[in-house]
Amino acid sequence: MKRIIFTMLSTLVLQWGVAQQITLEECRQKAQANYPLIVQYDLVEKTKEYNLGNASKGYLPQFSLTGKATYQSDVTELPVEIPGVSIKGLSKDQYQVMLELNQKIWDGGEIHYKRKQVKATSDVDREQLNVDMYALNDRVNQVYFGILMLDESLKQNKFLQEDLQRSYQQVSAYMANGVANQSDLDAVRVEQLNTRQSETELLTSRGAYLQMLSLLIGEEINRETKFLKPVTTEVTLANEINRPELLWFDAQRESLDASESSLRVRNRPNLGLFVQGAYGNPGLNMLKNEFSPFYVAGVRLSWNFGALYTLRNDKRVIENNRRKLQSNREVFLFNTRLQATQDNSAIQSVKALMREDDEIIALRTNIRKAAEAKVANGTLTVTDMLREITAESLARQIKAMHEVQLLMNIYQWKYTTNN
Image (cartoon, rainbow, N blue to C red; front, side):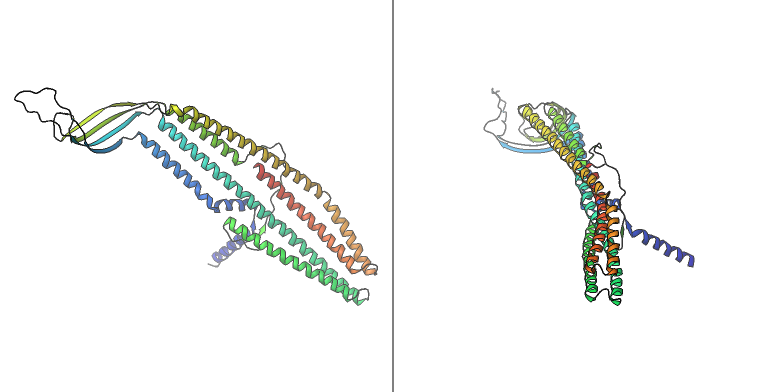
């Protein structure tokens, strides 16, 4: 029993330890699953299934029930009179109830192209959702790298506090030896307080970013969670643009192609069978003035030429829409390639700055050590030493910011190109 409890506790501890780390990819996946728009994928598929089912039902027999009551000014009469025979004329008020069944034999491809149009429309809706969902990645990137920036600032702030604490102890010792005075110690104390205030501001900003990310991924994030830095990758301008917008443009083009194909169907004849069953006065025997049942069955051919009037303009409208779509696609590619070039330029710029960060830090460290030695010898004021300590801390912070900035620019380029 003790072994089982120990195993369960160990598992919980391991799970708790794993939960304290999170990656950018995990945040993206959780944000995609949590975003309310995700439910529309299922709605699009269901709508597609319903519309396809409705289109297919066009092959089923179609029933219609009609009824009419009329009064007419004249009725059919025999043009001759037969002596000794009384023929009752028809009533001018007539009645009829009819049930008709129609079965399509050939519809000229109307149902086929209707199903094709349904699929094309569904593809457009789905690709539009992909575009909207892809844009969510950029929002997650901004928040995630914002947290990394704050974490680096907090780390450098902690180092600065340690340096200032060491300086405080040194100045206290200098005071005992008569090298420094109370105002020098107060100057160090002021810097310590300023640094702690900066830490408070950074922690507050980090808390706000954590709340935003928690809302995006649908999970509460612990303040102790460690955010892992993504792995850096090399980028080149030779990579192609693979944004989901391109698939959206392709889906719209296919939808226009389906619409153009359906125009030809409107000018084709329709062939079908029909059966009419009716009850009325008069029936098929027009000379019989009484209610009677009857039926009619046959083959019906219909051909509507009215669509020919607008066929040319309908094709022109589709062609104009196709050109407009192509123009939008080219504009999107142009702007995306331009943005990718800017992103790559920003990456190269940060890399160039990072080449000198280590040297700047080394020089600042030497200057700070020299300043501390001068203070100990009484040839430099504590205020000047504090300025050098702050400058060294700032150099380290700039290097840390450059590292995160490089990652952020790389992932901005990856988002721009989807590579």
